[in-house]
Amino acid sequence: RKLQDPPKIHGASAQELIRILERPEYRYRYWAKREIRELPAETVEKALDAWVAQLKPEDPRLDHHRLEAVWTYRSIDRSRPELLRKLLGSGNHRARAAAVHQLRYWHKQFPDALKLLNQGANDDNSIVRMEAVIAASYLGSREALDAVMDVFQHPIGGHLAYAARCALGSNTLARHTEGNKDYDISGL
Image (cartoon, rainbow, N blue to C red):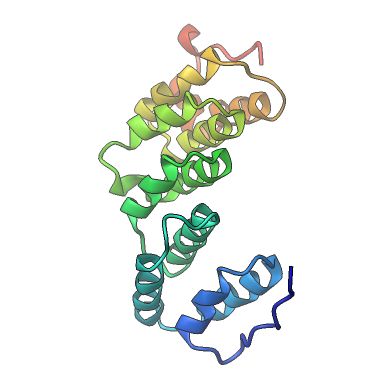
């Protein structure tokens, strides 16, 4: 594979910086996102919308590009629920996990956020289930807690067990579980 030349970052336009998000090198993407945060949000939003619109479904890195877009929208305090929904349905468990992670911040824009949390809690992959239970602690409602309780219907151990114990013991969710035998997590 031929190495690309280093990109121009400082002083680059929003469009140029956003194109850097396609690169495989993490450090370049990181520097570009730092520079993007210094630009007017409206300028970045317009350039980001155009970039996302031209992404090709056959691109093997499509999920990666979509995630970079979601994270960049978040950095300029914008959201694109339709883009996140595509990632939540991805065939790539890493993309689904990152999307469930993002759901904790954009959940108010999803009328079916609890259903999406429940889907995450029932995902085949334990990392996605872990992100769902952590996201529930950000929502903090009894309904969010109930949405992720299915996580215990699947194998649980290691990082997932630790995350579930911490999330269910968090201030936001513990108020719903304390003294309620239906939410006994002592076995974790």
